[in-house]
Image 1 (cartoon, rainbow, N blue to C red):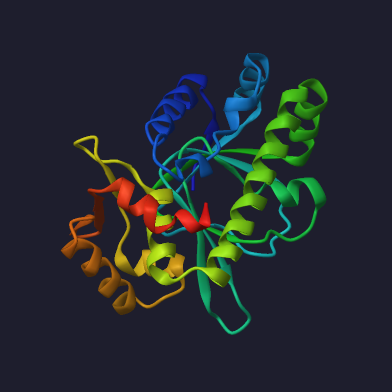
Image 2 (cartoon, rainbow, N blue to C red):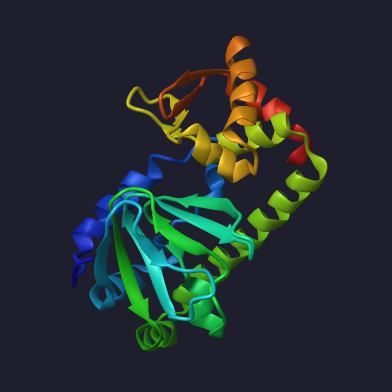
Length: 245
């Protein structure tokens, strides 16, 4: 892990990259923290933040940590996961550039609800409690961004609870594929996750997931390649999960 002060131009580049992921159903689940900040708040955030680098698979923080730091992802992707006392793990979310995380502990001082692990090499901005409090006092738009971020998390958790309780696996799979989709090299939507990772998101084994994906592939809805699911028929995926809208 290395440290340096942030440069505003790098943050702006990251925002542009994150914007490319918008446009698919579920892409709205992402929330670019800077979207709700005034230009002055963005400038002061950039000036105050320290930038840290984490290697792929390196832990950023553990569930129940009380480090009272906020992170904003500049590049790469980060997994958020829940762990149970018996060691089971649920992959709760995959963050992309522009998103903030670790916010709840910064606000209330309680333990973090998830573990954050770098899926790829990542670069993040970090603010400590004192710095964030100073920025919040100077810029009301920062509180607005925090509120929107936490409300987004509540909506996702409510949706996931309903999905786990009421929906069958094909509906849940369609919903996650749409939520995780981003443009591929050819501009078409794809999900760049292994089947083991996608199974972790859904709470099913890789073998069970593979059967569902193969069924969708046989119907022309998706195309599978190593570590990737290419989405051919977005409308049919939306139809599969329409009861969860």
